[in-house]
Image (cartoon, rainbow, N blue to C red; front, side, top):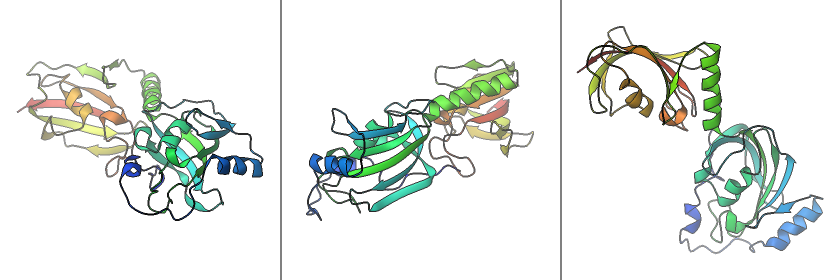
Length: 275
């Protein structure tokens, strides 16, 4: 099961806050990083920003971008070996919301890759620190990139589902895939209409997570997930088909109730009426 980040991936906004706390120890420098590299017999590379990294295995899958949502396993510790946080089951994070050293470092790997990031404080939590991270601390992260880019993986999964089920689907500019079995003959809704729709929602493995009665459910198209707002407008009253919705048009990174984060959703839908 997918899990979520806690401390070390907090938005860098926290670094810039004016917190008048004295550092709890002497701020660490590049000399400390170089000494750590020597003491641990590492072969590390330095980027222009000052990040040091070690690639044990680059990986062979998708390489994330600075806007990707990824899944990693990690162990975070200080230069003295003290562990401050770890995840063995995997953590989902948005690269737009993490410390700069981690954002830069993860883009050096492809899916399946692993290695070490040595992050100076100015690419982490700065002079002020954050919670249990002292000001001026260098962070060492052992990481494995288990999912390189959820958006790209969603696309792969959807296309495989379409092929495996011999479907003829169309993709919209937003990334929604749809199949129109019957367009319908009545009124076509707008994004502000209230509609009644009968539906069955399921994951790509066929597991059903929600289903209405044949009489359907009434709701406003401006009150549902983006994939529904867009998708239901593709039908007229009486029409039916299938919507294949990537996570960014569904329940996003964090999911909702029984729906995991970053999950593709499939819906069989029938537009009964525009109310």
